[in-house]
Image 1 (tube, rainbow, N blue to C red):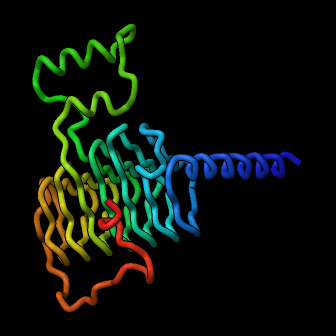
Image 2: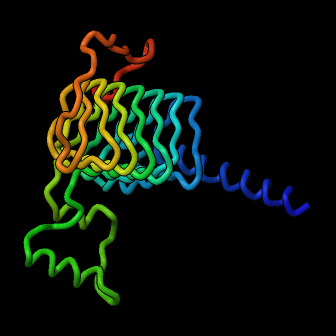
Length: 218
């Protein structure tokens, strides 16, 4: 009896969170949510977050009021991964994002000493705080991120602002990526550098038939 109630509770929670995802984003067919995955859309406009079909979400998607996220089809975002957009993050088709990956298009906090001091006063207990998650982000440097088709990002990797990861590339576990990654290369380390080149004759994987590529939806 207890196990049945627990299963029913999990099912209700799953349905509730999936409904919230569809309210906060434009999502294609065959979408699967893995708790505690969630979507946080500060703009309130579902078109600011678009997800293609046949995608799995176990992590967190977050956008500031002016940020946008575009994710292609057949993508897998594992639990603990976080994608945070103050401007724009565009992800192609067939992209795998492993557990604990952090992809953020801004510095999250200002780097100037005076601005950091003011930020600490605002977030301290009793401080004024911020009306949204994007307010603090808007004090920091930011630049769009593009991750092309068929990219694999390993566990606990970090992808910073302004980065473009080329088609077919692999980002190794715990790599820190602050510069563009060439197509069909493997990068590793902090900062990430090329450690291997993959076969250049690997066939390009097209977007699913009849579907607009994420980069064309901007």
